[in-house]
Structures are given as structure tokens and as C-alpha cells.
Length: 65
View 1 (cartoon, rainbow, N blue to C red):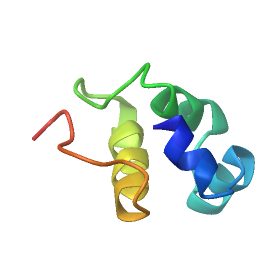
View 2 (view 1 turned 120 degrees about the horizontal axis):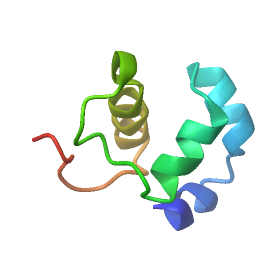
View 3 (view 1 turned 90 degrees about the vertical axis):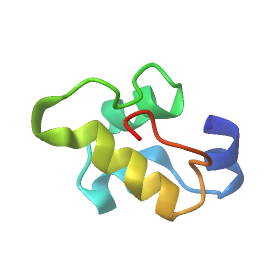
């Protein structure tokens, strides 16, 4: 997923800031360390994944579907 993200030319710091996410949480999602399959505080992981999906970076089914 990180390669698809990098191909968009976006910076993780700016992308996280614009979308109201922690850069570290975004990095963990891009590195596929977390996938939203477990409940996280306030559903931040799921929000990040859904934003990435709407931007065409995350492709396929999400873990909780």
C-alpha cells in the first residue's frame, strides 16, 4: 500500500495533517502493521483506511467487512 501512496506524490505528514490523522497512525496503516480489524479508540484506523480507499490508495476489501 505504501508504494501506491508514494506514487500519488503525497507526503505522509501533509496528508495526515490535512485529514486530521496522526502521521504515525497513517504510517502504521501504510506499512500494514494495523488494519482496523480490531476496535481502536475512536475508530481512527478505520477512518484512515476509508480515506485512503476513497483516494484510491487502499484497494480491495477492508478487514472489518
